[in-house]
Length: 435
Image (cartoon, rainbow, N blue to C red; front, side, top):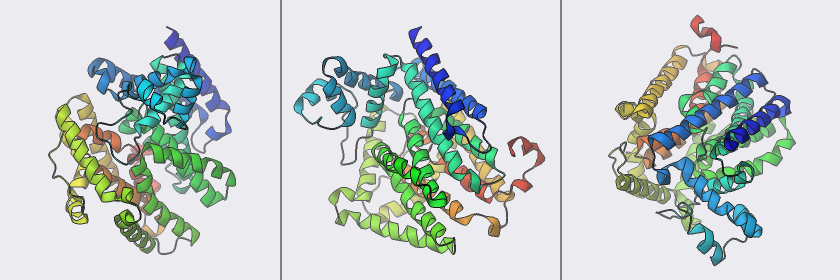
């Protein structure tokens, strides 16, 4: 009962913030709509809790509980050793052996089964839960409300960052961000995808504010958003860099010859990425991706994953990765279609994939003249989507995990479609989605 009252209280508080805070004033998206979408996310987060509590009942392997339970272990230091709690929360001065013995070794997810030189992003979720524990008194659903609010902030930031560049598609852009099934479901629970969209929204909104409006106030958010992305999903930040560099170059030079700039930037980043290991051994990108795929196959095989797809194992060389490009693209964009016989979530994933394919076909069919397309934004979306799709497809042989990992990709695939779709050509039955 206390958990329900706390959850309702914090929900009311965040609805009040949405109603009053200037940040939530967005063209084409009313505060009431944003509040309704926030409540929809809480419902989706509750559905995710139900799935991991009553359908997949192994608490030790349920992501929503793994980091929540470890966060409680970290929080246990708050009353008796508050300075230890602060040190673990911030990561400053927490390398003494007693932290390892009393806390980290007691946790189930602080250390990975397969360690590498890439930062363990589980630490970020554990710290998030340990912080929210100050307000939740150990009630899980409060954590859902908090993370749904943070994710809503990120999604509103993404909406505001690009809505002015896709006039006529405001509602479709909002639907792509808030209602697309995978994005709604997987970004509404106490898992990494929700915080990832929070960080991604603040990062891109800050950058676009600086780039297009010269708003220096956004600089204050850019650094912490970058740090959050780095420590949460480094490969998402890495995937953004080539397309973002090309976009900035195009905008700063008036958008002339964007395709040429796009290609030059991508080739340049590919050359730098393939040779980054010469600068520091920890920057051998292909080796990192090779290890990630190898470890994923090992964990999925040991766990008996039902959606494991047989894949050719990569080698840490460019030719091996080049050979697997078609299969990587198939995995990311088409493999969920094969999950239709693997339970309700598999059916939903397959149906969503049909919707995504239909969205791409519709955008091409009702396309606007190429001269009217905002090419820098379209190429930015396309570049980011392709790079992230390759990384996901190369390293993730499990369809169930892949559907989650492509959550930060799908809104930008939709945005690319909106860039080329002509709102004036959309059929009359889509009027409800026109602004």
